[in-house]
Length: 221
Image (cartoon, rainbow, N blue to C red; front, side):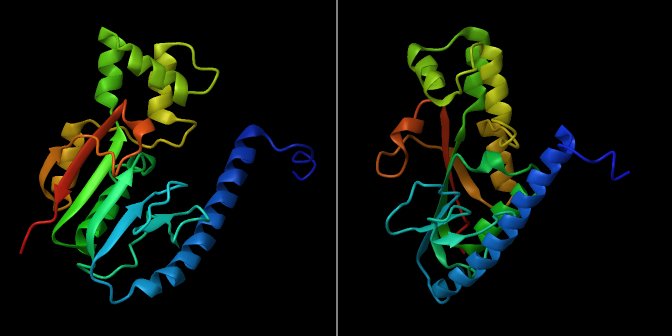
């Protein structure tokens, strides 16, 4: 058996090994983040920026696995913040990277828990309804320009564009339209879910075309 495994690993084992190392590094980062989060105990007006990547926001608690984040967390796990300790939670092009219906449902219920009554959850995800409509009906030049900016060089056809939106090198786990986002947020305890406009003080300008913007509230007591 060992002789058969000598030489380069087959593709499947190579992918599985890479995933195992990635998950182990995620585990280590999360342990570090739990320690980092202790400094926010007793806080009552936090603003969380979930899945921030390298997009650091001043005045926010930037949460991500990235080393530059204020708190490094695996957001598939419970949030290490106290009940009603946050006034606002923001996430941009991150929810689509979490499996549906779990653990995204658990994450959004955690968001509702840590928000104050009347607190705001603001979210930006790829607008997949726009992607599908554009495939059938054709898109604007602005839309196609955004495609060319974000897609890899191998992208040439609109079907490749759809597949990249749905999978993005196996990083995208689920795609949203407003109907599905609204259903999910209401199921997790949010109210007054609505589409919103791009906000220059909050959102990245380079994500404006092709994004779905929404916000919801935690019910007031």
